[in-house]
Image (cartoon, rainbow, N blue to C red; front, top):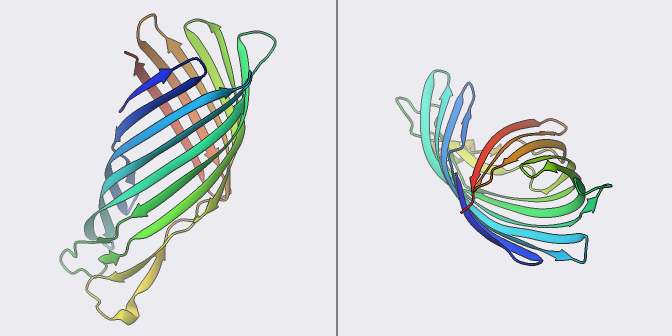
Length: 243
């Protein structure tokens, strides 16, 4: 759920929003549930007749509960992570033949800096595979080049789509020190690593938005991203009340 306020002036806009979420991840041996809060400030301005510059800055804090199964033994842990986000985008809008179609090529940069606490798993009955993992930090620099197309044939309907390439630089793999909880021999400590983020992704998206006469708008969207080893998909149904 997102709650926010924004204001549009003659050539500028700005706003602030807060989002409350419950991210979940489940696999055969791992289940993670989170409670997150995100605060974001954003704004932009027109540069001349066609160019625009926009940006955002914000932060996120998430508390996780993790449950892991290894050889019929179950372990639980709690930890939290924080993130800092900053980005800028330069774009140019152009009308295609008539006022119904608008294409907007853009290039953008954003920084995503993450800091995750370490965790110590509850050793359960034997604690043979329970882990004690240190904290880690990660900084990703992302450059996005693409374009979106908007079509509004009537006052109450907008169709839009976008295509882009996202280049990912920085700490694409994170590392942390780890040991088994019941093993106190420092010689047995080891290093664990995360999944490596792909260096680049191609992305496609589509969205249909329906506007009402009052304060509501509803949209249905779909996005997909595919890299060298990773593919992601997202379907969205959004309701917005403006007051």
